[in-house]
Length: 151
Image (cartoon, rainbow, N blue to C red; front, side):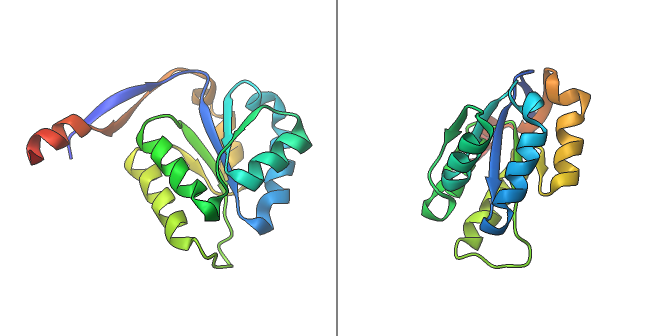
């Protein structure tokens, strides 16, 4: 597929997601990194978003709960280039009823070339990168060229 680029602004739009067994870990991580995260626009799937807002005091735009369609809602935002990075503390040892949605979310993140951290270590590396607080160009699919070829 042909590629084009888009510019991520210095103020990133960051999605925060956690499966049930990892909500506390994500909340602790967000609290530890509150200063950096407060400089960005934050979004989170349903329950996680309400927990994080309550426990950290950060302004977080809540989406629908993951199992109720929040993963798909977030995937749509990624494909619309409204999300720049995702911190997703997922549970690799327990299947969840909405596993297909989770796979689709990770797939669309890869298609649209957004950075994804799936644990504390990668999340720390991601937000402490100098690029996280800078304007940066990234390669994305050239959707118009894709349409032109197909129509």
